[in-house]
Figure 1 (cartoon, rainbow, N blue to C red):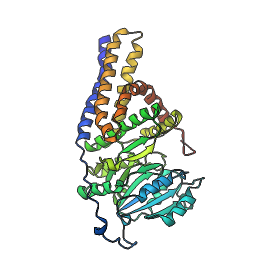
Figure 2 (figure 1 turned 45 degrees about the horizontal axis):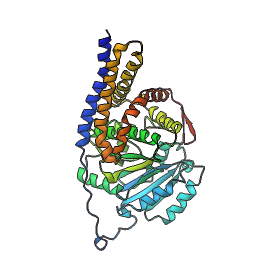
Figure 3 (figure 1 turned 90 degrees about the vertical axis):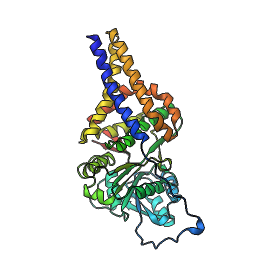
Figure 4 (figure 1 turned 180 degrees about the horizontal axis):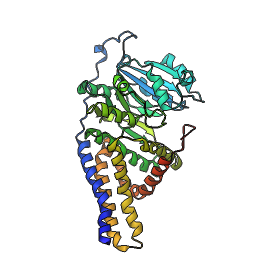
Length: 393
């Protein structure tokens, strides 16, 4: 009987390892768009009149981000995409700091077209990130919408990589997910949370490459505006504080199969500060987990359940081996199999992100992940968390 239980302890890690092997192959096959050479100053073409339609509208939702917005605005001013090809629209979500005053001043001096939308002045707009993005979208002029967050940093070729991918992809693309890297002080918490987050980024990109998109991040994505309208945007999940990214990904994949891409290019990387404390990390992850119960996307549901069971089964076996020592070999083998699969998958992802050294923390993350994932998942299903000074559901 104990041998049967030992085999069962291995079953979920084995299924998980098989899934990660497929995802690693898909990640390795992701194409990298080639950036065209920058034109010499003498050969550059004069900018068209301000009334010309830009190629990209960059949308940002901001709430109490006066400390972070100057860095993002400076990054956007350094974009090597001509200034007439993009505009930036930032929606102030009822900030109580100097966010609105900062944006009003920046709009008069920015080298690119910068517009502020105050959510408090939009009748019936509501509150929250989705409401802010929707309000900003009403002022967008470009056919492509690019989204990031107010506390993010972007490189000078960020928008050029989007342009390069779209130039080579043709009109069939409706959604592009970009890579995100957690940054911050070099602490153990930052390394572990960054490693976990890198796994999410890699899984999201590989899933897109495999034709089964499951996840993306609202800090770095783009979508075709007419496709957003065709699926009614955030309709059906607008009341949820989280999920401005993945619900849209799932809707667009269902409506336009094969139209999702992942932007695997180092210059497309968006950097965002990781949660500074364990409590902040848990609040963020509970907010993310709160949307799982609203998923109607079967591949995402299956993946979430598989990850949870692959982590819980061997750890449960270790605990049970105190009373049933015969379970110990199966539990240890399950842990080893899962760890090997994680490292095999994460190695190229971390290499792309420039954080290969984080791989050394994979064993520690695995030991902590089972109770962490269970508690976060249960808290997310229960609902109720605080974000941006607001209490949610």
